[in-house]
Length: 118
Image 1 (cartoon, one colour):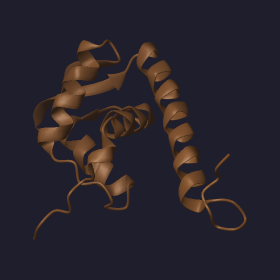
Image 2 (cartoon, rainbow, N blue to C red):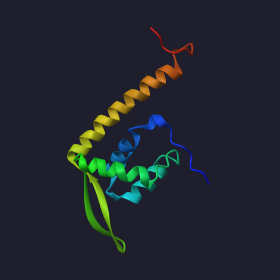
Image 3 (cartoon, rainbow, N blue to C red):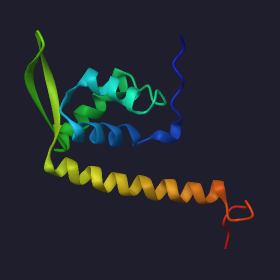
Image 4 (cartoon, rainbow, N blue to C red):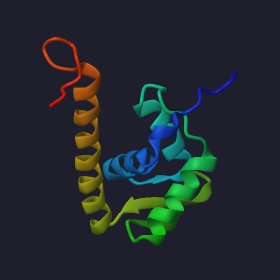
């Protein structure tokens, strides 16, 4: 089965989704991969090759902590957002919602269906 391609305009979205999901509970990397797919209703299927670099970048930026913990019979690196990461999540969410409103205005247009032009 071929995975659906994720559109190019999603740059930055994996970071936002990872922070949001980790704000709900700590997870190891593969859990994050599965959670993104599940929480998005299978709309996003970011593989490990996308998610792990995001996790490492967020950790280097000080937005996540990574601790080795026993999960089941294995030890895994479990990620949690830092206070700075939660602030980053708030800022990124506000920025994304502004983008969505702008795109919606252009695509949805005014009452006549035309884009809202000045």
